[in-house]
Length: 297
Image (tube, rainbow, N blue to C red; front, side, top):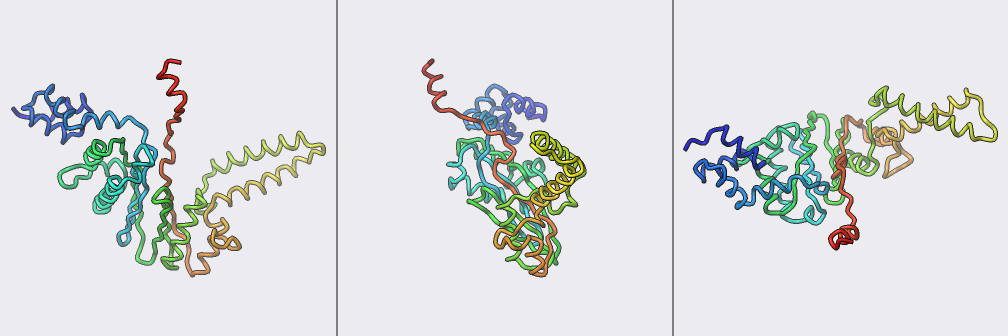
């Protein structure tokens, strides 16, 4: 029987399994949808798809540097126990190698990269069956530099946080120092020039309301002109605190990060930081409540 694309799509819609797995199932069962579903279940693939709905907020972030190209990505699982499992860490290395040689620049494209006859999506699905937890890929990004620039990377706690710095001039050691600072201090912007007018306006409004409320409750209220100057001072201070260039350097707080890099005859071109699970809404679990629910109390 001919295995048509529409038949493969029908099986995929019913099971959520990958296209290649659906085709294999249909070939093995001579196009019988019902038997193909059983085939997928027996192989553990349908079971793996069910796990894909579970929240994966643990895992490992990684940076792979190859010449003038750095590939960043995050591979998530459900528990920290699995994140430290040898099977999972090996999978991280395999995915990193595939992405490094693929040239893709985003997560959706990365999932469709084919290696050894399987897409990355299918590779992860197979891993779900073997490891027993949902596994997801996200935050795939490529950062490139010129020959005159230098990369510095840093990994904290086995990949819970990774950071990359791109410097003009200076050297790899200085770039690594900056990457370490980025991991520790989590700056949001490189300089104040990168902060949008909307963000500044919002922050100014919040600080203004805060200052007016404080002034209203004060025994000796200040004139409005003084309040506005206070807001300007607080705004400038806050903006500097979230910009990499102006932050006190973690290894020498007497210097700003910008001054430290200048002392090494360099400047900072860009930076990137990934923290595992950042932005994922984690499920809050209460073991006592679960036990009570099971006992019907």
